[in-house]
Amino acid sequence: MLIDIHCHANLYLTIDEIIKEARNVGVEKIISVGMSYISLERILEITDRYSILYPALGIHPEEVKNNKDIESQLESVVDFIRKNKEKICAIGEIGLDHHFIKEKELYPIQSRIFEGMLALAQELELPINLHTKGAEKIIFDELPSYKIPNVNIHWYSGPEVFLNQGIDRGYYFSITPAIYYSPAVKNTVLKVDKEFILLESDGPVKYSGKTGTPAMIREVLNTISKIKRIDVVELEKQIEENTKKIFPKIF
Ligand SMILES: [Zn+2]
Image (cartoon, rainbow, N blue to C red; front, side, top):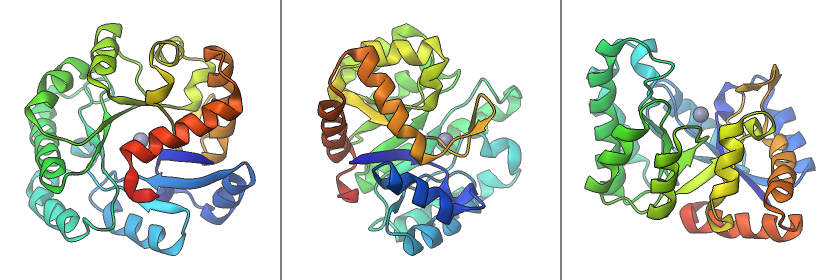
């Protein structure tokens, strides 16, 4: 069984087709992660409608740029997530972004939202799905102050020193189709033990101009199998076990 642990399923216009394609290659579960304030309700709607989809809720670090009101909405986001805690398997997508977000004046707001999300994950005893782009050091310094069951670093492509730190701390790393062209993602695959690898599409993000879909993780698995020289059947089983450990609520 393949599981796409990070997908923005609410953003597809042709979700029926996307799900059909995914099932055809053996994807049986897809975690649909939160992003904007307005996405949260929509995610619960579609995950209710499609049995293959499981919700995670959180505020994406880029939301500070898209939504000027997000800080004042934080309390209602937290209430909404608390109210739906039984339905969700993780808090995510959350984190900091100092790479795509260039406006430094937004960083303090981003940090306050992130801290609110970390405190919530601790309170609800849920794992987190983390975006760390360009802010790896700040995030890795901050994480030990929270008691969070498990940490998933999504699409890691940052400095090697934090990759090593994450490995030492037992974080899980999810691998996207960027494995085909990104030396940093390939290095993540080489360095992280097979017991801590997960699969994700981050769809509908584009890879070399092609819209990312959950079905693509079959080929991601094949590529990891070649890079790590592990039998593909064994690796698929191993990644399923890893996913059970970090996101037990979707099983
Ligand atoms: Zn994402």
